[in-house]
Amino acid sequence: MVTVLASKAFIEKIFYHYNSYTVSDFESDKQTDIESFLFFKDIIRGNKTILHIDISEEELLRLKANSRLEEDEKNISKFLSTYQNNKVSGTPDLYQKLRNQDHNVDPHQLPCFLLLDDVSEEICKKIETGFGINCFSLKRMKVPMHYRSVTLKSLSDTKSALFSELNKFNYNALEIFDPYFLDNSSVIETCSKNTEFIARVKKNELGKVQLKINADLIDKFPLNEFEKRTALFDSHVKNHNTYNRDCSIEVEFTKKAKHDRFIISNTNINIIGNSLNMSSKTFINIFPKVIYSDYNFGGK
Image 1 (cartoon, helix red, strand yellow):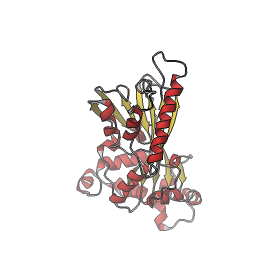
Image 2: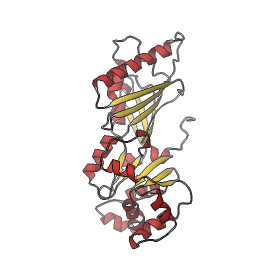
Image 3: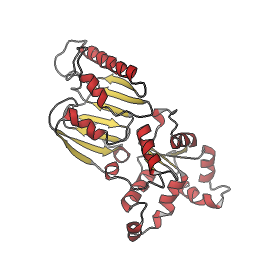
Image 4: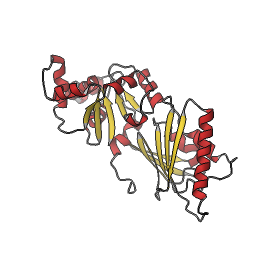
């Protein structure tokens, strides 16, 4: 499940304006296209979505109950009355903070998609850069293909090309599954492999990137080698945070690696053909999380 935080105005535009359009209407519309309309309709009402709206819980209950409605509330009330479960909630404070680019927010509460009211495309892009989420509005209603479809890319060199592809997307958290991640690092303090990897991770104005690495030591290493290597990586992260106070990284290691390599961000799921630090040719398959969040990738 993923979270979509939407304004009443955006929901009404999709379900009570564009919903009556014909194909020819979309062809002549300069604001959006039929593919984007269908995408927004699916993610707002989709069975993989937890929907949050820019109204209070009290207003939400009143509108769902069709109680004391003003004329301009009838459409959103009709929309909300179709929800008979807890998949919709009101979060006006978070909505306003994100709309105003207030970075004093809990990263764990950030939505995958933010759908704003009458906000410029420029502001939407600043929000994406600042928070590592996907943002659209009534003035930005055309969804780029790579936001809504599966992408397959060939990487000539995994280590150097991987993040060139990943960083085309918005994210503020990465969970990595790579059993060989630590095999390709070194316990020598002066080794640059860890710091080079940290430098490739996309930073944001939120000021924090969460990094969880599920790894293991495949070959026969001494018993405490895993701890030595993770401790060294952690020291390199702390060094980065000391000299880059505008955006810190939090790292957590586990031994829960799987055979296949995955990178799961807060916005997409990525399958990699080999280990992340390998200097060899491979592929990356990128799946939008808002569509494929419940897909069982390799038993995950």
